[in-house]
Image (tube, rainbow, N blue to C red):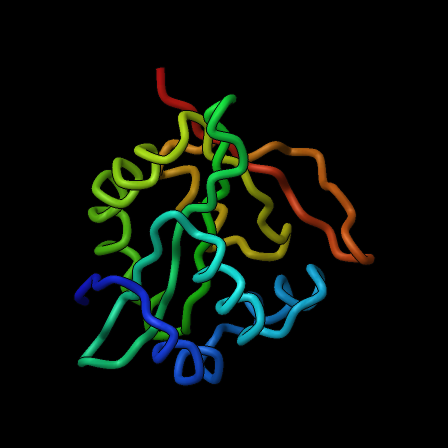
Length: 149
């Protein structure tokens, strides 16, 4: 797996490979996978693509919500193939999070209650995943947060 700066050219290939749970999360937020990737890329202070064998299999980034409060929104959308690289994602976590925290002291977002793999990864990366669900367009999500001092 190679991490490179995200590019618009990565969106079409990756959108067709997104995991079903990632597509469902996008739909609950009112977007297709391609729309969510495009929005994430355009709104992010930094965004990266994970390439596997030269093909885009994940895109992620951080959106500055408020520079005054230090709040930022991390996001990650990926394929089944990138999901099978869990151990590598766990090892890359500190590097990814350090880069994201450059843009915000508090990283906050929502994850589908059904996205058990993402919830486990978030917890391993040091996020607190709230137990109580939040309903968005009839889909249950859990809020997650990670703060630095």
